[in-house]
Image (cartoon, rainbow, N blue to C red; front, side, top):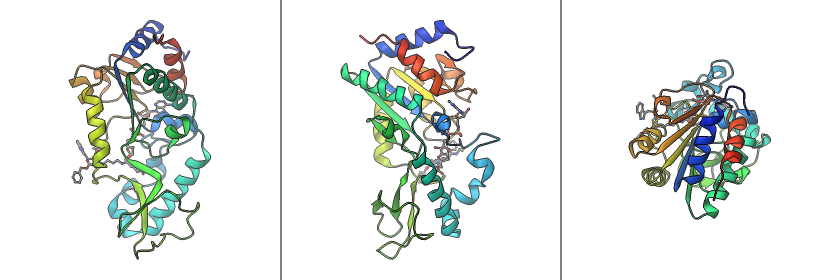
Amino acid sequence: MPSGIDETALRAAAEALAGARSVVALTGAGVSAESGIPTFRDAMTGLWAKFDAQRLATPDAFERDPALVSRWYDERRMRCARCVPNAGHSALASIERVITARGRSFTLLTQNVDRLHLRAGSERVIELHGSLFAWRCTVTGTKRDDLPMPLPNYPLQSEAGGIYRPGVVWFGEELPAGAVRRAARAVESCDLFLSIGTSGVVYPAAGFIESAAGVGARIIEINPEPTPLSHLATWRFAAPSGELLPHLFESASFT
Ligand code: BJW
């Protein structure tokens, strides 16, 4: 058990999880921190600290310098491919298996582009911000998951005369419409919502936490640091998700 965790609160949250009819989990970069993938907004180690996000993670940046932006994303793709899912990813996959085996609903909304949830065995995953592993032709929109690692050129020319761009969602871009629709539908009917490892500042993803509160779902927040939406949480655990989630799962008596 991570130090400083209130065991009574953990048991209550685990009981709510075990009894929930419909569960939605929203994850952010923090869930992959223990796999060695830097978060976005951590002041010392975050991706934003080492690189100027405005220079690299926007449609304008890609238009201005597609070689630099392609190389940055390709390096991140390779780094994520070398990382492995941690105990938090595995616990979420186990929670999904147990809940769906009992005929209840479970949906995992992730803002992460690292595919670690899928590699951990989660199946009902909605990738809100796309994936580092899917690249898209700027002319035809054709998606490619099979481009060589590393890419042979930056930027990589496509067969249609365009270039391949990372299949992620940049600021000012719309999230995939189908993903948002399915996520909104799941949130509307959930009675338990987990917010894990997200700073809760990027919309529309953060809005799902507010929507869950709006429909009366109980909310479990797992994050070592408070967030602007912590006040919505029924239970808040200030702990790393790779440590807390396995305990939450083990404490839940699913019937
Ligand atoms: C741990 C831990 C451990 C550490 N365990 N926890 C409403 C209000 C204001 C602004 C807007 C609004 N609606 C839209 C906007 C604009 C904008 C936005 O939200 N801006 C805000 C920043 C102010 N949103 C958009 O532009 C979105 N698009 C949009 O709205 O389009 C509308 C539109 C309509 C019609 C036409 C056109 C457009 C798009 C957002 C895309 C976000 N993209 C990024 C980059 C992806 C590509 C890449 O990877 O490079 O997605 S930004 C970045 O932030 C990334 C993340 O998915 C996202 C969220 O970050 P996350 O996951 O929360 O990470 P961190 O680092 O912030 O936090 C980590 C947390 O983990 C911390 O709290 C730690 O404490 C914690 N932690 N260790 C558990 N071990």
